[in-house]
Length: 115
Length: 112
Image (tube, rainbow over all chains, first blue to last red; front, side):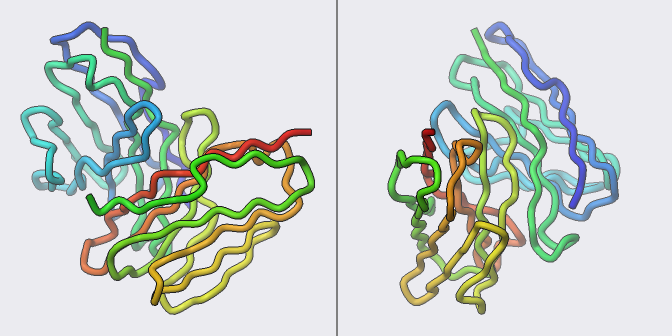
């Protein structure tokens, strides 16, 4: 498996501001993903972070709102832009889908509260 | 929505009892994975079962998969208070490049 860290672990932000979340993996991985978990809900995939190219977004998520970078095979960032209270969620990165026989492993998550 | 359904939504049992959670999904899959989440923290990977497997064991966990019914179950035997958590199934649908679709989750409470 992989050791995945996320920064920050939690934050409280004001509406209209932006927050960048970092995801660091202890080994090179092919696939990296970003998920959102709204309060009391299950997880929803935001996008696949592609190394060296633009991220692939799922329906309902757009690059202007959730820009993603992936400069190398161990690191990715997700920015939540122009935040509103509806963006209050846990944001999780995950890795896998091939590197470990299709198992996916998740980071500890970033709990975001927007006031 | 392609999201899977889990039942029950909540389950309360006493320590030592077995807990069974069910997951239904909607599409053809490559595999199905079960995760545990404690108090809104990160997800802990429990077990992966491939589409050509029918049953898998890991410690006190037993997972079954019925692709004809598009359903899976997770059995936790001899439950402990530390098993208190939310449990999610997640499917890797055929042709989706490892993107996971999560079920709605089961909240398990194990009391002493």
